[in-house]
Amino acid sequence: MAASSSSITIDIEKHIASRESMRVSNTVELQPMEPVRYESASKFVAPRNYNDQEEVEKTLVNIGVKKSKTPVLKLLYLGLLAGFFVGIAGIASLAVAGGFSKDLRAAHPAIAKLMVGFIFPMGIEFIVVFGGELFTGNNMVLLVAFLAKKVDAKHLLENWILVLLSNFFGACLTAYLFGYLTNYFTDEPFNSYVTGIAVSKTSQNFGVVLLRAIPCNVLVCMSILFGLSARDMTGKLLGLWLPIFGFAIAGFEHCIANCFFIPLGMMYGANVSVGDFLVKNLIPVVIGNVIGGGLLIGGSEYYLYKWENRIPIHHPAPILPKVKLPVHSEQESSEK
Image 1 (cartoon, rainbow, N blue to C red):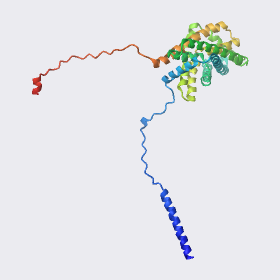
Image 2: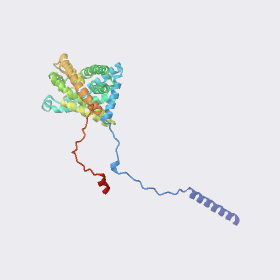
Image 3: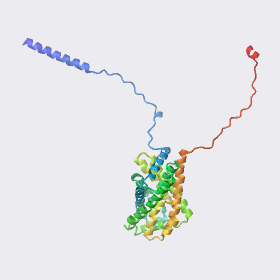
Image 4: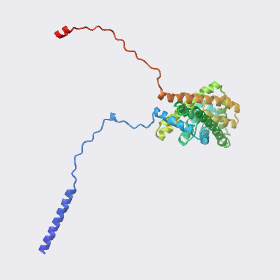
């Protein structure tokens, strides 16, 4: 018994010793960590969450080339879709702004304009985010690609004409199907507001309407530029919204929006003829929109980053006063 108990004790001691050796062998010796060194805050550069305008200009060229190659049927469909989105935004705007009484609108006309300004920009947001071809936006996009010599004049004019016609029919059809047949604006104070817009837009002379159309498409194209500049959806929606809000509250003239507002007012009894609509409004507005969006914004957007000074500038050498320096002979220099 004594021998067996002693052997058991020895086995236990050996087992404990082996476990201890295993524990020591598996222990990792920790080295002291070097202190973490941080660069100064002045050297930290936050990631840029927007595209600068030089990048946007290159994007516009690529978009313009893509638009010029769009098949005709697809182009017409996308144009109808854009006209539909503009019309839906117009219906929503009239449903709110037209709900104020005539006396209130007469005393405080800014209230109705503010309501239109807040709501109407959703049309451009639908077009840019979901998809569509808008004539006024293409004034800028196609012209930038044309100036970059990526699109020829034939494809530029073809796109403008087809998109304008499809926008026109899309907006008019939306006015008839969803603005007129639904009887949204039959009762007062909506009826007087809708018909009053059509009458006021066809009561100005050609020059006044043209001038009002130029800054309108400047703002529409700025809206598209802001949307392309943003890299996140929140920035894109805000960038698209602000310039359209500006043109809506200012009362500038947008040809595609007028293809909805004026025909809708005519359907509800406004004293406006088709000739008044075309001659007194649509034609000068189209011309003004092309000038504002195409020439002013499209041309500026391209030449800001493609400007070349072709006139050589020669900087004349500076004229220095003549100074008579002393001349030392070899003998004098050797003596020194």
